[in-house]
View 1 (cartoon, rainbow, N blue to C red):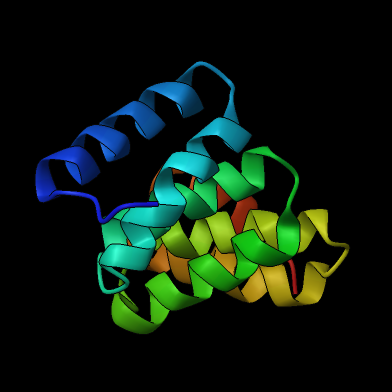
View 2: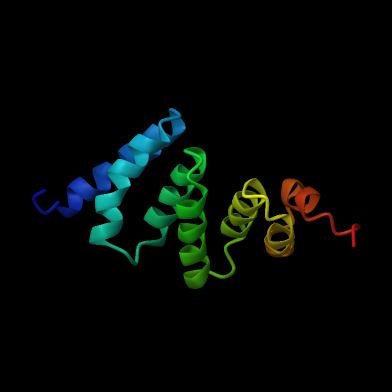
Length: 121
């Protein structure tokens, strides 16, 4: 594949957002792969790709992408919450609980607080 221009990469990113919204996560991943390859430091592209992997039930790649995002942005409440959901779907509830609680502590949204279950030991 020829090298993509910055403008084309932006178009691919925006199109991937639309595909994910239209419930075509695999199509979104295909568009995001060259974006992430060209700019591996781009946290927004990685987060979108992680969401697409999650929506496609590709849990291990989703987990890895969310972890990369959190290495770069440890205070990203959404990434903690999404990683927790990914771990939960992978039957790793104990690991998920830690990230649910971090998400709720960082951003006390009602859905994050409910998932964190602070009142439960």
